[in-house]
Length: 201
Image 1: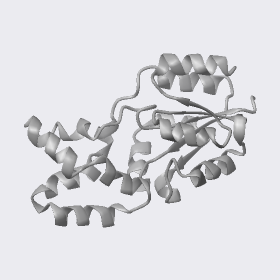
Image 2: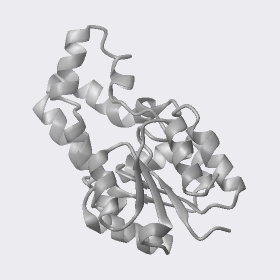
Image 3: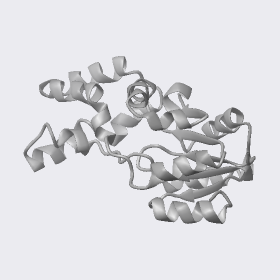
């Protein structure tokens, strides 16, 4: 077994994640959909759950602000898995290749703990990973240095012994400041090349 481990982000790396993926099924009018995603269920609002705010607090507060959108706000939690239903092409195959080669695999994700529990249960790919560091459980999110420190402890590795891929450049740069071998994710082909250069494949 190689000492160096590979750490994957989840949203937009392992799975295509967009809030629009769900709400375009519920809102037919394109302008209304754009308004809803810009004002009601926004990525900034969603990020509060990633940072540890429970759904029991988050949803009632939003419904109080937008009572006429109550059913759609409830759907955010009940049907969240539909926001990331499709795997990113080619990446799961790379995960399985790494596993077959005995590479230690981990995830570091900005994800609300309650939503991740239901998402994980629906996606067997997560059984391949030795551990998954979830921001909502830690109540701290990337790019805060503390979550990278937590990951190092949980992985039992630090610095160049961690290869990291994430679609967010700020998160990648934060990992690089800790000495990680960190790479921006742009697709499976580029990731495969990066993994080959690092000696994993």
